[in-house]
Length: 383
Image (cartoon, rainbow, N blue to C red; front, side, top):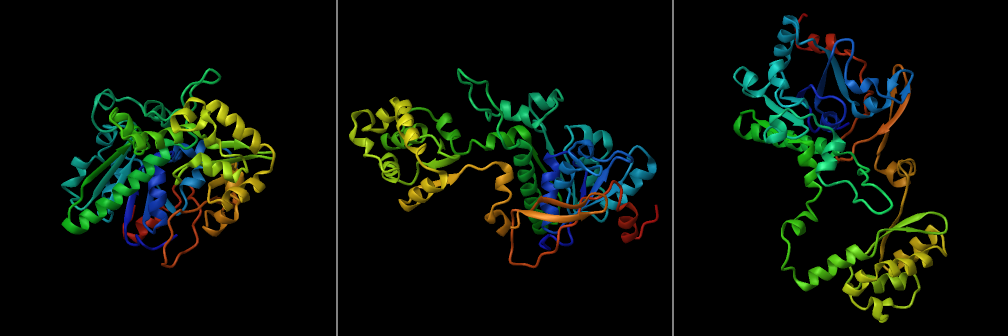
C-alpha cells in the first residue's frame, strides 16, 4: 500500500467485481476507501466461495485496504449520515444500473449542488445512454464479452469460448483511470464532474490493435498484408515433450526463417509451399504440422533456451497456480499476505503499480460494518 493518494476519501458503493477493482487500485495507492454495505448482508460477493472460516476469498481479493460502513439509505438516519460522509469526501463511485443511483438519491444532479467538489464515478453494463441503457438491460461480464467480440470463434470442433480474463477487470481499470483524471481536473478547476465507463465499452477497447483493420477494409499496403498474414499463420501455442510454450512471430523481417533456425530445421522459405507469406498462410496446416512435430522432440526448457539464443520471443505456458508462484511474481510483490481476524493469514493478489515512495503492508478485507463507528468518530459525528 502506497501513500500517493493519501488524503483522498472515496465513498464506495461498488459491489462484486467491476467497481471493486477500481477502488482496490485506488486503495492500494493510498486513498481512504469507505465501502458502503447493506446492513447485515454486505457486498454480494461476500456470499460467493470458496471460503476460509466463512471468509469469501473472491471478496477478500477485491477488498484489501478498504474500510466497511453499514448504511441503510432507506432510513432518514442513513441518508443524513451519508451527507455527513460526502461533506468530507472527494469521490462517490458505484456500479449500479443507470437510474438506480437516482432512486437512491446519490446521482450527480442530486449531489452536485450541495457538494460541488464531489466527483461522481459510475460503471454499468452498457453505458448511460443508447438502446440497451434506455431499456434498463442488465449487464454481466460474459454478456459484454459476447457482444463485444471477445469470445473465440467457433470451429467444427468447438463452440465459441469466453475469454480467460474477465471484462469486469478491464472495466474496473478504466474506471480507476477515469477517477484519477477527474481528480486532476478538479485540482485544476476546483469543480467535481461525472465520469462513466461500462462493460461493453471496455470489451471493445480490447480491439484497439486489430479493430482498425476491421473498420478500414481494403487498400492495405502489400508489406502490411504480409505481416498480418504471418501473424495469422504461425500460431502462438505449441506442445513440447513435457508441456506447452508460446512463440511470438514478431520483430523479424522473416519470422519463419528465424524460427527454423531456432528449431534447427532447414529454412522452410526454400520450399515453394512456404516461400511467401501468402503461400505460408495457404499451407498453414502443413506448416504447423512440421513445426509442431519438431517441438515435440525436446522439453520446454530445452526449446526455450534454444529459441532465446536466436533472439526469438518465447515463453512457457503456465497455469494460474504456476504463474502466481514464479520468482518474477515474487520479485514484483504480486502476492501479498494479510492477517484476517477470522481466516488467519491469507495470500492475495498484490498491486501491479510500484513507486519509489515508501510502502506499507496491505490491510485485510474488512468485516461488514467493521469501521462504521471508527469513521464517524474521526469525522466528529455522533450517530
